Each structure stands twice: as C-alpha cells, then as structure tokens.
Amino acid sequence: MAHTLPSTKEMITQLIATPSVSCVLADLDMSNRAVIDLIANWAESLGFRIEIQAINQSKYNLIATTGPASDGLVLSGHTDTVPCNEALWHSDPFQLLEHSNRFYGLGSCDMKSFLALALEASQSFNFKQLKKPLTIVATADEESTMCGAKLIAENGRKLGRYCVIGEPTGLKPVRQHKGVLSESIAFTGQSGHASNPALGNSALEGMHEFISELLTYRSGLQQQYHDPSFTIPTPTMNLGHIHGGDNSNRICGACKLLIDIRYLPGMSMQTLRADINEIAEIVANRRQLNYHCQILGDGLPPMDTDAASAIAEYLSYTTGQPASSASFGTEAPYYNQMQTETIVIGPGSINQAHQPDEYLPIEQIQPTIELLKNVISKFCL
Image (spheres, rainbow, N blue to C red):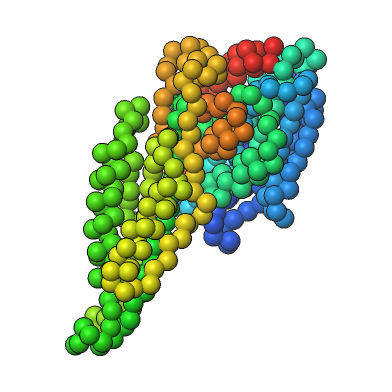
C-alpha cells in the first residue's frame, strides 16, 4: 500500500505534543478528544472505518476497524497519560526529545507511541486481502477510572477474538496480572472526655481490634492462595491510611482505615469484600460500634489469559519468552470479560512510566512494528 501516514517519529511527536492527562483531581484532568481525532484521521487515511464513542463530555474512545466479518485481531492502547511535574523534567514533557537513542516525552513509553506503531504496522497490508478483521482501539482514562475500557465491555460487543494491548513490557508477553481492590472501613462510636472512658466508646480502639483480625485474615489468604508465576506469589494487603479522632483529651468518636488488596486470578473481589464486611460487623457488634465498608472506585479484576491460548502460544514462540505475569494493572480484564484472548506486550519498560524523563528506547520501535506485522499476518490473514 502507498505510504499515507506521517513518519513514525512524526506521529509520536504529535501525540506527545497533544496533552491528555487523566486524573481524579478535576483541576488536572483533561479531555482526550484531540488525541482521538489525530489517531482517527490517520486511521481513516489508511481505510479504517471510524467509530468515536462519547463516554462523557470530555472523554472518548476510538474503534477503527477494517476487514470482513468477526473474530479478528484487536490492537489496543490508551490515549491518556498521568499528570507530570514539569519542573522535575530535564526537557519539555510535551515535546519529543531524541537523545541517547531514546525518545523522551510524556506518554512516549506509557503508551501513546504504541498507537502510532500499530498504525505503522497496519499500513503494510492490503485490507482487501484480510480474512479476519483488524481493529485498532484507543481508549480513555486508563490511568484513572478506566471508563473507556469499561464502556466497551459494558456494551457487550466483542471486538475480536484476540487482542494485543501495547503496555510497556520490554516486548515480553504478559498473560496475567493481579486484581486490585481498595476499600474504606469506618467505625463510629461516641466521643467523650478522656478522663472517664465510660463517657464514650472509642472507635479507635475498635479499629485496633479490627486491624488485628484483618492481619489474621491476610495471613490466611496468603496461606490459601499461591501462584509461583508472580514475583510476589501471594495476595497482598496494604494498610495504607488511617485517621481517627481529633485530640488527645477526647475519646475517639470516629476512625477510618483505607486498605489496598492485590489479589490473584481465581480469587473473587466479591468474596474479599464480603469477608472484610463480616470481620467489621463482628468487631462492631462486639464493641457496640457502627461501621461502614465502601469500595473506592470500582476495583480492577485480575487478568488471566490461558497459557494455551493461540495468541499466548504464538507470541511466546515469536519472542522466545514464555507468557508471564506483570505487577501492574491493565485494561486486559475487560477484554477477557468479552471472551477476547488478550496478551499485554509492548515496547519500553514500566520502570520508565509515571516519572520524570519518561522515555522509549528507539531500538525497540522497529522490532515492535515487525512483531505487530507478524501478529496481523497470523490472525487476520
């Protein structure tokens, strides 16, 4: 096919120069529409059919499809970045800098560049010869709410039988990651003068008792669940934040704890929440306290693509690396929910993501394009 795209470097330059920060803080959050429009225009120039999904007034998904029928291949990436502190960068985070065989810029590694590489790989094919469809998906808000991937899953429209998500893995295939549950547990008692404990009912002492029970529960989970394919082979539970009371001379009337659980494939978020609620209820009843448990956000399911999946086996073979696990979360579980066999593989390292001077090694760009060409040939031709 004729070359109708800007150069790979120019596409990456334009994507980085188009801010699309995703953040739960409203004053930092941005629309991703300009990035979506860039990718849509490039994809349309190649002959993709373009669908732009409005999630809300500022967030959008792009679904660009070519080829016949169904059960094809999806190449997926998110369009947003985390916020950045420009003062900590040695260059402008929104201007591509080529230095020391690296492309520096916000989103260079995580993960705007992958979308440019997916387009570059796609243009090598005559779309009329495809036996299965090829779809490029660009999502919103992966770094905060994951509303883009959630909408696609909720719509229930299977976009393909196989999916590659181009998060930075150093071009090593990943088929598993843990789920994430963040929970708030609050106890309410009765404040009173500290000189007489009978005047109140300490929520803080109730929380102390609850934490003891919670740590026992954590130990039980770690004895029950073990998966050696993960660097940390057991589920983890972090007690991340606690706040209670207001002064040393007042009995604590209210206390809140925030916890983070990273759980293995095969475990249930609903069961974890029910167990935590039960422990809180037992402690509250024992100490005559009120309690309230609340999930923070929606949580993230674990990713678990079968090692025997055709795409897992193919990418393991072509890279010479067995499909393994990652310590970070992705949008893959939402594709798995649509019975789409999904592998996470992309250029760069997660170690460069979410920090100043984010970069993508230039030496990994062409191998990524060739890998994607091979995947398209395998699953669309």
